[in-house]
Amino acid sequence: MAFTNDFSSLNAKASCLVSAGFSLFSNVTLMLICLDLWLKLSVTYVITLNTIIGSILFMLFGGVGMATLPVSLIFAFKNRPKCVITRVMALQEATDLAKRSNELKTATLGL
Image (cartoon, rainbow, N blue to C red):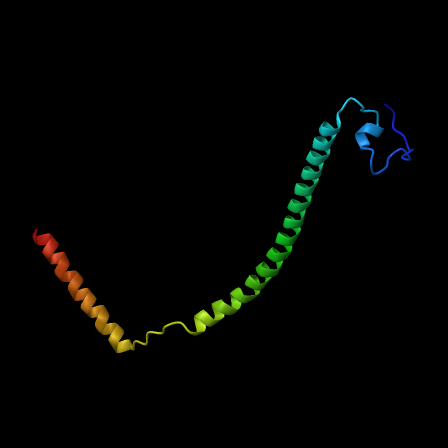
C-alpha cells in the first residue's frame, strides 16, 4: 500500500481504515479500533493538560514560597525569644557548675 496525497475518498461515513484498503474488518471492529484510538488520544491530552497546569501552579506557588521564605526567616530571627543574662549571673552559673562537677568527680573516684 503506497502513500497517497488524494484524500477525497475520506468522508464522515467512511472510516480511515476502510478507505485505506482494510475492508477485512467488520464495522464493530472498526468502531472498537476508533474508540481505542480516541481513548488513547484523550488520555494523552488529559495527561498533557495536567502536566502543563501542574507546572504552572508549581512555578506560581514555588515562586511565592521562595519569596516568602526569607521574609519569614527574618521575622523569626527578629521575634526570637531572648534570654537576657548579665555577666554576674553567668559567672555565678559557671562557678555552681564547676562546684557540682567537682562533687561528682570526687563521688565517682570514691567508688
